[in-house]
Image (cartoon, rainbow, N blue to C red):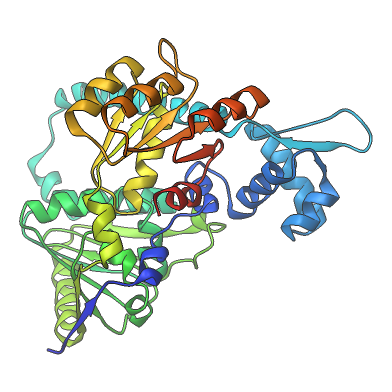
Length: 405
């Protein structure tokens, strides 16, 4: 078995880990061209559909449909004038509303789950039915990923995961990383296989927490997940586009014969594959960032979480979060962070006051002010207090990393 050692370092690999605004908006339910149009609106301000189409390079008829959909989703508004002009709604409010709705859905699911389990506990299952082989068809990519997560979560010994590059790259943006991390902590042996495209995009596999995988010739462009008790498989997957996600489907079965045959296939692929070991040695610049402690202060919990996740995506693991401006000074004195991100508009104690208090204790602390207020009064005050840098909302990861660098 040949083993190829690959050391992850250099600015190019580091930059590849970056999530852009389009990818983030896709996580909030927008298709790629919808996200592109919204970002274009945010940059143009109020604009006609034809102007937006020219800016985004999306066909005009498609642009009209996208704009109407963005209006229905609450991302944009239009005027009653002629010609009609469109403008982007406040992204902070939009994303906060989406997060709130998703949290409510989760709460409802948890309540209904408890009710269902109580009902199910009253039913007596026939022992012969439990042992009967079952086959289930799961449709829609999100449901498929949930099923893969479930199989990994239920594995206690060894699991083979055979996936096309497009699947692995998409999983980069799902909870899969945490599930795999938990499985590795349980000493589960994860044998991941893919084709040679991922040899040059290995940062996606690294982000999943896997340090060793194999490049092999895939039997199909589909999925094959196999442990000792069940198999998930499909003949093919769609490309990187999300347009056909609802048309995808997989078969899940606990048939002993199928499981045994698929295990034999997976073992053969693993034995004949080319091993790649990822040794996580970052360059000096990354090491300095990872060792840094950062404090994020904002009275909006959602804003703090999103901001902190941006930092963690870039590998900065020591991030302290604070939503109470009064407690911010206590946390600062305790951890003495190298960098502080301060929201300006906060109740009880604003960012300007906190900046003054922090500098009394540690003048060399890098303080980056975060605000949506672009008024002349605020800009004048910022010039007076001279923070290390200023980020204006709506911000993106590039702004944040520019400040840190």
